[in-house]
Image: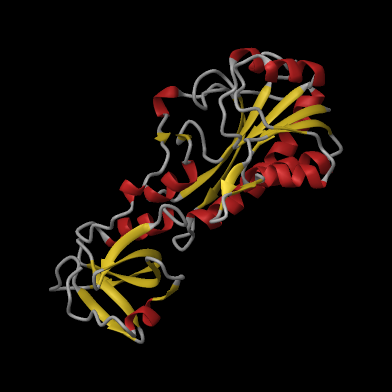
Length: 308
């Protein structure tokens, strides 16, 4: 099949790879314009651009899809299908209507739940036990198109957003390969979404980072997992702002009050939470420092008996 692929971050690479492995003709790849990276502020390629270039695929990086140039390029390429995975741009109606088999998207949630920019993070932040991937037709609304296929997976209590992202990227790619085969054979069976069941996953911000020790331990644990690696949950320890990178649910902390440091020694750092359950801080990152085990931080910062 003649396909144009649109994607930008690492999440999209397995989907592009599976289309290539299946023998589809990838006419071109659309990805976000190069952006400055790291301290040197040199322009860096997106993960999708790097993969496309390494496989000899033509790359397009329009700053907008609404000036007619992208549409003109796509008309010249004449794809039967446009496949989108975490592209980062909204496709206008004239592009959505161009390919005869439509435009489909790989989305990392079980739609209609968690439409929007950060479905993986919000599934964890909200304590969901299950999430998954959806392949759907693209429409003018935000992730509102008809569903072509879905696959669910359980979320481990120890799994952070990065680990879940990587799993869903592979799951989405495998499901995409199946759906594209069904579209080519004319066997696809789209189903409309129930908008009454919709929820949204807005972009993350640093306003979500500060830990409130008055919340239940599980909620804080989910905050740490869901905001990893950015913007990260944060706490002030011994006057130092730290990113809290990894935690574990502890035991009941009867008689304690929220934010009380219950343990701070070579065996670890444990803090009481609002529901009377302790939370173990396993790994953290002080401002300006590298990530470290909590025990290593405590060697220079005695905290036992203090309140956070």
